[in-house]
Length: 350
Image (cartoon, rainbow, N blue to C red; front, side, top):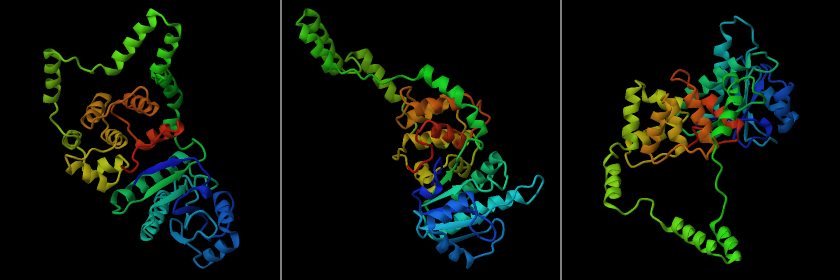
């Protein structure tokens, strides 16, 4: 049940419910609110809202989606930002948690939020994002069902930490990315055959050897090395993960919440020696545990994976880990970097 970032028009998102950043009177407004009313059919949605109005700041109510793509529209009233107001953070937190509770009551599988109160209500985007992340992760961490939450963003203002890395990430990828070898052996063979030369025979022999030769020579020394490798395969993935959790002195709840994964999936991983999660999930757990690069590679190896420099996503993750210095790990910031490069975000359902 991940939290995923998307840049989109919320009225065009394919989810079971979308969230309207409403006013307490539930009247059609401008911005996101106005767009949602237009998509649903202003008269029909206003008639439904009039039956539920007014609501308090932080409260949420639900209506049908009418002509919109969503089955339901959840309306929540965010706080108008006032510096020094001690209540507004809790009110904003409640906007998300109350909306999610309504979605859970309907057993919905997906919901899309705007960044509530960060527009004309003036809540600083980075602070609004922090509250949204905390509320959503707290809810999903305790929720028994299965729900994917999308946070729809329009600009990068809320992701200051991650945005500051983008230029350096671009340089890191450029320096280290290994381009896939697109040459075809058959085309090389055909090229040299046309010349009907001795060189053609040599190339053909080399190509056939490359295609058929075993990875490890069949010698006593090589067999001994191979045996030694398998002798060192001691810990299963779940066993190593358990050891790392204890080494980092974290609770299971902290790990799966910070990893942006479902509690039931985490339970399956930790309790079943025969279960191997996807690479995406392993990397999410590595970020949650604040592993350095060497520790991350160790955890990946135990599941049969490795970081590849032919993968842009892997390079972004490698860069992120190398620049955290065991201090600041935030899977949402990393997901923003992956999102910027159109790569799969961490924490999606295994």
